[in-house]
Amino acid sequence: MTNKKWDNIGPATKSVWAGEEQSFFEGAAQVPVVNSVSYSHDDVDEWLDVALGKKQGHIYSRNTNPTVKVFEEKMRVLEDAEAATSFSTGMAAISGILFALMSPGNRIVSVKDTYGGTSFVFMDHMPRFNVDVTMCDTHDQDQIEAETLKGCDLLYLETPTNPTMKVLELKRLIAAGKKVGAIVVVDNTFATPINQNPIALGADLVVHSATKFIGGHSDALGGVVCGSNELIDKIYGFREINGATLDANSAYLLLRGLKTLKLRIDQQNANALALASFLENHNKVDSVFYPGLENNPFHEIAKEQMNGFSGMLSFSLKGGFQSVRNFLPQIRFAHRAAHLGGVETIVGPPRTTSHVELTEEQRQQLGIPETLIRCSVGIEDINDIIADFDQALDSI
Ligand SMILES: *Cc1c(COP(=O)(O)O)cnc(C)c1O
Image (cartoon, rainbow, N blue to C red; front, side):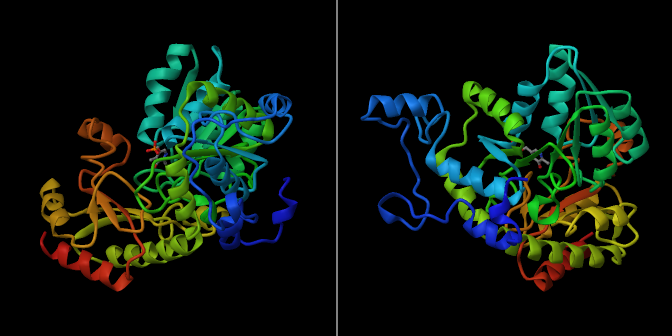
């Protein structure tokens, strides 16, 4: 790629320094939050050059903003891409990609286990514009590959998936997408650039809900897309008009969170593996879904394409939904919420969160047990997390 300057620089260093090697306004060592809607230009010719994109600078913050620009640069470097553009939320980024790049008559291939909002765009909105979407069984890599090879304009992958942590074979599926000339998109939210680098595996675009691990502190919404100059220009061109712009204050919070990305993800990887191993051997637990466990069906492929197995896991309790009712309130050190990726542990049953609108039968078809609990493991001391889960499991 075009990141020669960052060759051989590690991700922890990139997280801290990318976009921040220079000093800022009045010599500020930290990125200023620029709360200005517009930028004044005393020289008319310079104004014209900035407006025409011949000279660096800013015109209006719906388009570009200095704080937001540093965030985009840090993400660009972390994903080793030519370019990056940001959005107000992850869903704005995902729908921005689809609405910017798809046209009537196009075909998308994806999987059934994409993030709920993404599924809704595929099912309810793409068809309104005569874009056909084929959603394959997430565990069936043969079917995804075969549907892709039939010909498609965009292959949309997400891995690991919500909530049962299925892992898609990136190299193989990306190769199929490339063979038919499709744009290959990977939602890298669960993995983060620390654990998985889809662009290095051949993907054209990587998208994140920055709301999750990227920000990492559950205090800012955001989205980002990284990829080639050509594709990012098109997506930015749509975002600029559609107006789903990342706010400068949120960009600052996301930047601040990013500086500890490597530390947080390393700790969350380790904590999730320890918690998964504990749960696997507990007599109140039915099954544990975590690709870091050796007996997990996705373990080998995860080991091959990921640097870590992520801080996300899910597990099902023995008994009926009453087990969930008993267990969840007993947890001391976890938010019960529909969110993930924060420094704090977060738990929630897909039965009442992401998959609440489905019938029990539909959940069964997706392989989601009624007593499933999704867990985003935080950075707390692992002994405390395990002791806490242990005492809460006793209440069942
Ligand atoms: C949360 C999430 C999104 C959507 O992001 P928002 O910032 O909530 O709009 C997309 N993909 C995945 C995998 C997510 O977890």
